[in-house]
Image (cartoon, rainbow, N blue to C red):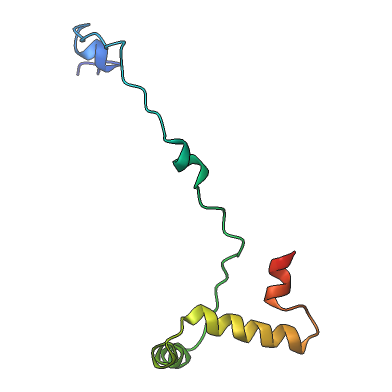
Length: 94
């Protein structure tokens, strides 16, 4: 069995087309560089709940026109308050 060529150039037998030297340069508009979104200050956490609780929370989101995160943050604030810790808003200021 013949050995495979080591590179594409070797496979083509040295018959490659010259690469043009005058290529276009990509320049970004200054406004796009300055408007980069900042890194999020919040950290993602995962919570495991029974399927029935998940369904109830999703229904509450629809009924009260709120997102799930707002309910979870409200619950975390209640737990932090119960144990004498600063609220999530106070952590965000730091």
